Length: 329
Image (cartoon, rainbow, N blue to C red):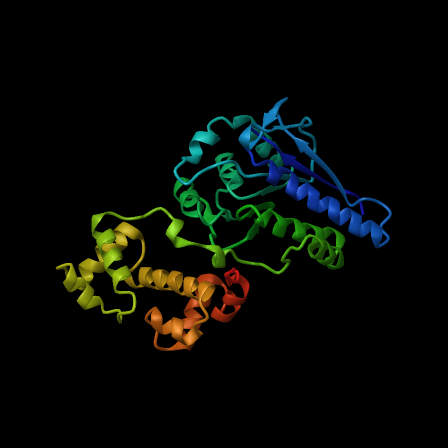
């Protein structure tokens, strides 16, 4: 089998760790394969750019080669904070967008890491495709590019030659999949074990912290949200909720839905699951006790709802995310 040509596209402000993280894991896989008898490297890797010099996030210089033919071209994410409009970054990256379009026209595969999906979308390469990105920016990607079918819960999404991943560590989920496809499951499994990586993840839902998401809605819905948060354990009663705000149930649903895109009950489920996650992470309370604390009388129904929101049943979530305080003294 011929070596797969994998290039990473470096550009101003990109995360250097996302440039080299993929390549480093492929290097590890190459060593694993060699130790198991492979005679030739499976990968030919490079860092490329249409620019002569590239300063990554934090002003760190990256040595780059000229753009060359590649079987797989990877777009790292860029430095961004929740208040920054990605458009401010994308406006200066037309040379990179042109490289991506040329890769697509040549029939090569394209991959983005985290908010690198914005650059793919800006280049016009995600229209009509399913895609993912960091859960923190998924809604922003969907609003900026309504032609993209955003799958915010997914770690890795591949659609007709274009692959997008969730944030940062999801680059390793993609890379392990690439190793598995090219070198076989044994090499991928051994590489994951050496690198201490989970090679069985499929969703980012368990990592979502809705408290970090920007507040969505206007005065009416924000008031309803606050009321629901203050009455977390109370039985959901739509007529009573509407009465608190002096509107009919129909008006409640219409106004809340218009401002937030969801029902009050859906929002309440989200807040309850967020609180349940905190309790599972930080206390020894039973699942039944946690369910009751956040307003669910049936632990089984609570577990099913929790799994829909996080991708894990409560017990499995606790095993993965439990925070244990160090012993005193």
